[in-house]
Length: 170
Ligand SMILES: [Zn+2]
Ligand SMILES: [Zn+2]
Image (cartoon, rainbow, N blue to C red; front, side, top):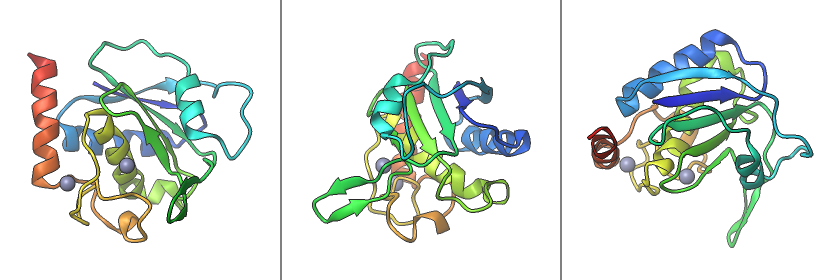
């Protein structure tokens, strides 16, 4: 089960549509598990990693994934090639991912774009690394072409996720 937890007010229809895309992409159930206040003591732009670690716990099974969704800005990250905007964060092979919709214009009409970012962060929680196929949702998310792609995985990444899901179910 993928549990979407919202920190801010989102259109319920948008969240519902997002859950549908997640269900299709991962072949595991997905639902909105509620809106919670974001952790206290943070200022915008948020440190994505710290926010993820401080995110309130929600009732979940061990194999569940939790996607925290916020409208607030995340601080950019320093790479050796310069600064990269941060849209989300996730730890490899873990339970939690965080996604900010601050870079997506008109979120309600661009659920596919939000979903593509969500797929990437959740993909990381399944242990999947970045992918060289520009059509795949695991292609590096800070590339200019990323938001233009489909909310779907390439065959290779999908296969990695399927294997993890199968292990979790057995
Ligand atoms: Zn990534
Ligand atoms: Zn891929």
